[in-house]
Amino acid sequence: MLKIGVMASGRGSNFQSIIDSIKSGYLKATIELLITDNPDAYAIQRAKDNSIEFLVMKPSDFSSKDAYYSRVAEEFKKRSVELVVLAGFMRVVKKPLIEAYPMRIMNIHPALLPSFPGLHGQKQALDYGVKISGCTVHFVDEGVDTGPIIIQAAVPVYHDDTEDSLSERILRQEHRIFPYAIKLFSEGRLKVEGRRVIIDAPRSELDLIINPPIGN
Ligand code: GAR
Image (cartoon, rainbow, N blue to C red; front, side):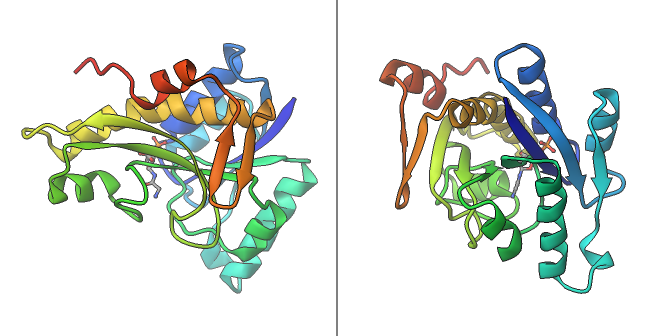
């Protein structure tokens, strides 16, 4: 069974979707530890509700960002975590963690990368006027949302969308593709070749994930 470590900064609905996917048997994995940088994160409540160990670790309590991420890596290694999942973790992860987990850290981003990286991907898409946006799961490298893309899902952008309505439409897809990406990883169905991630799955399965029927 795949041992997962999660980092989250806020609400934690993606964290919840992973918990639920494990509970339903869709994902054969265990969550060994949640690390949050925010003592007020609702993700903490979700950890408590599901008897998941958590640590509140703030970068400001460490002498440097490197010291922070070394410690994060240490805590995950201590618990034999094999895959680190960034579920709404609002910081750029630094070298010590990336080197401890090369191509073993996944992030979810609320836009179709490489468009609209960084913060507020949904608002950036609205402001730009694109007609399709979506979400991306990618492996984490040292850039900001630049690592190899694992899977994406598309959603329409309507002229009367607000940041909230678009975020909600995208979020629903986030909750599908993140567990799917983790499942692929846990089953050894992902192979990274340079920037490209090769997925061992039939096209019919991928089509449904990438271009889902949208109900609103
Ligand atoms: C999600 O929309 C996620 O894609 C985004 O933050 C939200 C967290 O929601 N992440 C980023 O913007 C990372 N740069 P959640 O806490 O309910 O999972």
